[in-house]
Length: 273
Length: 328
Image (cartoon, rainbow over all chains, first blue to last red; front, side, top):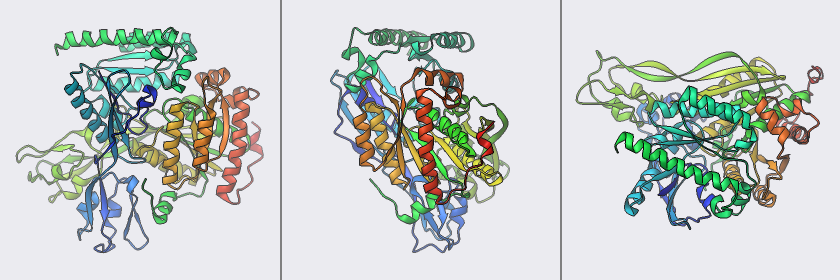
């Protein structure tokens, strides 16, 4: 297995694994406008064409670019009558690799703070992960994605064979879970659910399980109980099954890995891939 | 780390209303951003403030559920999509070339095909077409929900599942909030942002006068807090820290305090790790109204009192809150 942290704007996988990444390399997976004010004739056309409002009128019709809002769409360069606006590739993050102390490779993407185009960076991190997996003969690429359903999440889901959706037994988490399952279903990706912090509200957790089974036909892969060993293992930067193999949480995680392997072989048989 | 000139930061801090705006932001996965934002809103209402709350976590908005509010109005968020008038199209291919999202694909000399889910609504295709064959169409990318509950007006921006452009929904929710703040008087706007430090968070922070970064006493909380405080300082926004889940087993308060200190952020509040808080959260009842005597409610009320000072600092001379709104 190769592990990929594709939650690029706040990658946490190597913290949980306790591994250090030293070989971060800058990548240019974003484009941005730049304005040559020497050529600018202050016509204001670029300002009114900028949909994300990244160009602001300096007061005389010439534009001020707020780089962190620019999405690099190129509308300004199209409308500029004197070629003062141009689009160029810019560095928006970095990618690093390491081998965890448990033997498997880890690939991490880190978005530059406040940068856009996290989806492009996610795609790059995943393909770097796939290269390493190929090189090392890994069977599985395990990709840790960001929360939500927007651009970087869709980039994580693209090309995935299976989605493990992690939730909690609360109405709020159930609502977000439903939205994520809608997106997975839209892209035709089979999914299974992990109910974390199961013991917070067992009754509601059971309602969720019934809902998943009846309304969504989605299997619950594992219930994971609340266990003080979780925050303790996190503080120790050691994954729970190693930190305290005998505890309840560790046992649940081992069962989860068995369920995931079973699901992967089930969809593999069905898909014939 | 890059830094931006004063001119850029001044433009970023501008907003079309004078109402003080406070962003509640934070790290990934249940650090308690929304619980803090909602309870802060209700607590400030109890102190006599007219509060406008904006849920700008368009991917996973949950403010409405935590507040227990039902929407009274729903408005669609529409975005541009190109409609190709094939009778006008000459098949020149300029639009497909201009489309950096690769949503328009041209095969041979035929009119381009649109892959709508990739379209970022930038209108480059419309601008570049020499024969006006790209016409203005629209599609629904999300919705806004307007609610009023517990004395708080709430505007929620919700991305439509399968759409990817969260920032468009954040911008729409903020614009709707400015419209509401211009039409009715509010003492403060509170914006609940998405977690993390990406572009949708930046759009949510735009125009904010101050921010609260909510974190938890874990290595993940510490790492994310450092990122977020770097982001707010990059954007020229004063941010202070709220520690949620204080007293979590193995929790290391020292690390959080150290990071706050490094960024000259003050520790504005500590919310205990508490069963009552969780019960209120799942029941959709803000703990400050439901269990006002509980430890988490008391600490959130304390936070609201400190926030009054932030509001006053932002406003310079803040108008005195109405007296009648503190009794219901």
